[in-house]
Length: 170
Image (cartoon, rainbow, N blue to C red; front, side, top):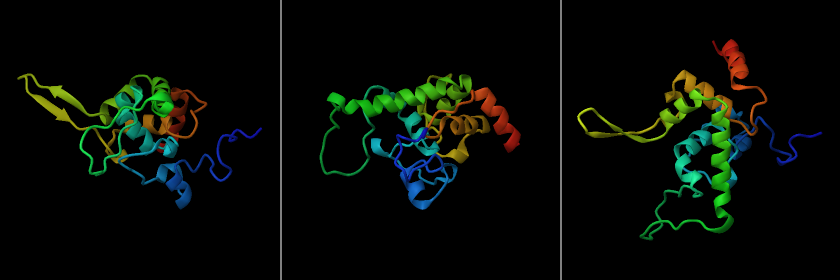
């Protein structure tokens, strides 16, 4: 049985995002670090997963992060209504499901990627800007990101996968 029945014939597991497919890159070589992705562009490559983790709070609320471009209009973006919230909720649920399988390592990845406020001992608040590129991540965070990325979830547990990863990358 063809397990890729939900993918167009020309897209296979080694071609994760559309740009990678068009340029014939493997997903790990994808330089696509866009500041915004449309719901239809999501193929769970490492850059898209980092972007999803960055905006996880917004996605969980059912909103898709707005594209940051000049429109000439003044005012805030309106909240999506109806079934338009589904892509955001489904993407955030998939990210959370994959992160949950990695336990504390996944929490560490989220901590490295997401922006947050840090209150110092003297009471001053410092804004921590999360890491935006793969090369800036710590080695354990890179392992988690590699594990959670890809069109499908991995068949192996994180522990099993990590042993094989370390065997080939150390």
